[in-house]
Image (cartoon, rainbow, N blue to C red; front, side, top):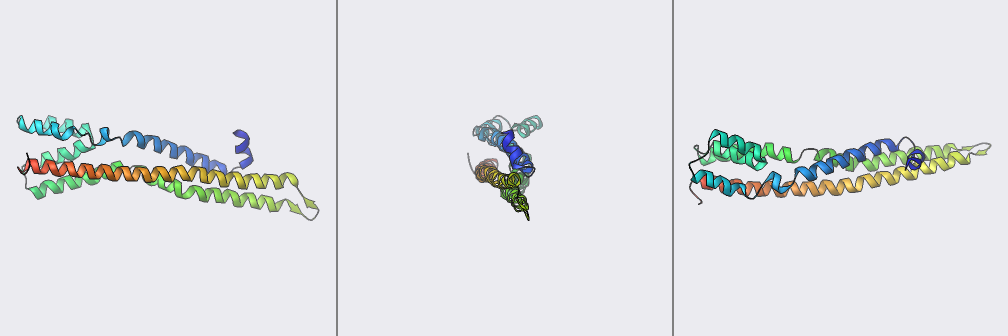
Length: 201
């Protein structure tokens, strides 16, 4: 591996750094975007039980906020339960924007890496071509420099593609996952609002 990195030259280092950052983000988002962590299915029935058993206290609201992102949305709804339906929905939407921002954390960076990696590979290719043509002189050509130029060009092109493809696939996957989670959370929040205002049992 070290021989390949040496053959690829200095342009490979930005790609190596980008690949490490991308892997870290992919691992973190896989862990953070688990459904049972973001929007547990059993949370709404549990909140309904609390309401039947005598309402929700400040302590319960605090636990709910610490429970999950969906818990934050529910806590916002329950804090405004005595207000009108419109006020409750506005509070949920405001909290929902913060939750959406949390779900999308690091995804712009991953998308940027997916876009920039091929360009970094192309930069390495250009530098390799410059070295390649620099090997030709009036007295002939330097075979070693010619071979190095080819190595820098090809290795960087390949590395750019290798970093970009998984990053783009992961970015699209996480974007879809975030959208699914937001839709699910919105539906559960609407159900809670209907329960609070006596429109659903």
